[in-house]
Image 1 (cartoon, helix red, strand yellow):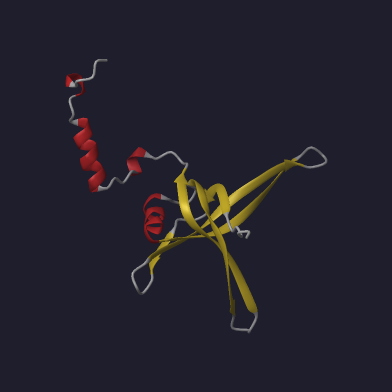
Image 2: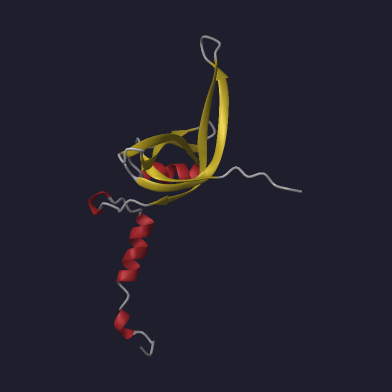
Length: 141
């Protein structure tokens, strides 16, 4: 029996800051747009560029991570699946929206040290590691 596959992998930049909301049951959901670019040379040798915009949605902890650490212009790798929803607008016209529901994200932009927001847990662990005296270990080298 064969399996179907619905998988998307993108590297691009955020077009807006993530918008974090919560469902009535308290589940976090973040939405943002992401741009990917394609460049090529046309028949005249001129460089051409096309930008494709993607609607991205993240759930739960990943949604909160997106909201806390990403901003417009951030370069990211996302991995997820396509999901299309449909509805009728006020004029009874059927509308469609395709989103990428992500389940993995890697931040590719370098962190700006002045804007870095570390959790208290991370600070405690970092302070513990920095307080270890590395000169008095039992290692032979």
